[in-house]
Amino acid sequence: MSYRAEYTPLFGSNLIRYAGLRGRIFRRVKRVLENPYHNTERLGHEPGQANLRGCRSARIDRNFRLVFVICEECRAVPECEYCFCEGLPDQTVVFLTVGTHERAYALRESGAEYDQ
Image (cartoon, rainbow, N blue to C red):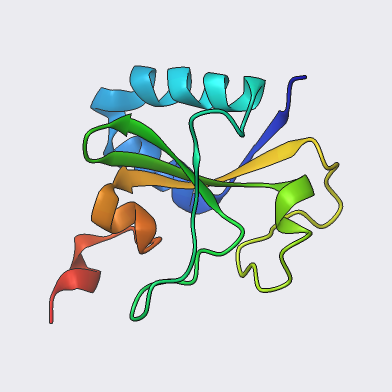
């Protein structure tokens, strides 16, 4: 079964940031759309970090991740803060972001957010 893709603005801006990895990113997106449950990790909530309950991640390389939600799954998780699936069919994958491990799991775009 194949899933439909939707992309957030954050995903789009991070795709521009990591233009050198675009081919690898889209190969992984294609595999996720074929079966989003295969070789992906369910995320949870770690104290002091973003609440990623209902989200999943897929590895692009050792330190690079793709973070997404599967509409049929995130609708069943009431505490999912990133379920942008209203009006979308269950067979939709919403790609939230792509980036380094730290940046992707924080759902951040700019490095300025790390300066403190």
